[in-house]
Length: 462
Image (cartoon, rainbow, N blue to C red; front, side):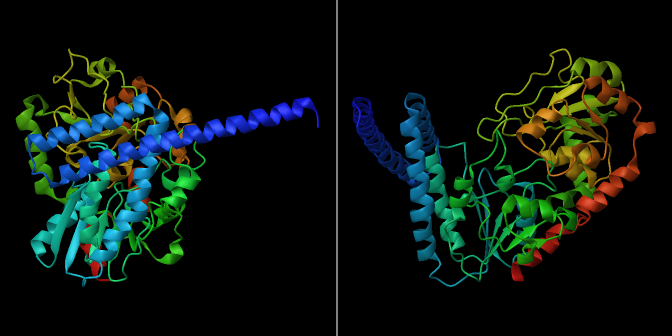
């Protein structure tokens, strides 16, 4: 053995010892922070709503952020411990205890963010009107509160799930990934969009910039335990198979339509929302409405808004006949500013003026400008014109991926510049192809006919 190999082996052993020491130190610090965070989250859960509770909640969220800024290794270890403890240990234990009791005529609704999402709202309202089932709705406030409080919030809904006849979800949810759901309970995934251009879930594992690793997805399978997944048409089932890694042979995919679209067939609803807009912004009276509603860029945790179209150019060509309503994705914390000289006279910030929901805006708008958002599928249900402003198409496909050939599937022009968008809208009477939209609707949203909520509720008793 050479002197060089002996020296190399010695250095390797020293480095291994140093790394073991560092890892132990990181784990110890993470465990101390975890104990503090859990105790604080417990205190928050036992406090009545009010300023004191809000302040303590905000303080804990700030502490988690400061930990990340100070030491990313400790922060990563803390979040890993927290997630594992709740999803693998505490949540299964709470569910096991609760599910020992008989099933009740009760339906549970859960939102990772705030209740209600559009489809959950439609179903919740109809069930309340029918009065057949007790209902319980939960908002977990993900990303609004600390992770420790988020997981603590989950325990309440898990307890109710233990004796529920049905549970309605509208997004991916890893919290139930280690549960063995009792056979009497239906877990119904409504999903939050009518269709998907961009890849999600397991489909993103090869993505360069989006989604979780294969190991994380397998360990915390967000799509486990579903008994039913509502879809807008048979054609879309294959995309959910790819995203969820669940075969259609299981029979869980139900083309009953998407409940959120039922309001688009309700004339009184549409008229009331338009009246609300006119009361808030009289400048919209007598004008046709263009809704610009793009999806976000980047990851869910670091979402950013896309580039804004040239609002001055659009106003120059369209302001005589149209008003522009702008609704950025809810995940985008910072939004491009509307030019002051056009704000409220031609363009309205509908995030800032949060008087109407996204579905409200879809219902009252005459034209939609979007990009890779599922809103294109929702808007097609009403057979109205759409423009797809996809200035970064190649980059987006490279980073996120698509289920379909974007240029082939879109039921409206794909534009790279604001000028193309404005020119199309200025001549929309001659250029709008309604038959193309109708064919798109039939193929991708054929089950959305105004009665999806009723058919979805019927799944509870299947």
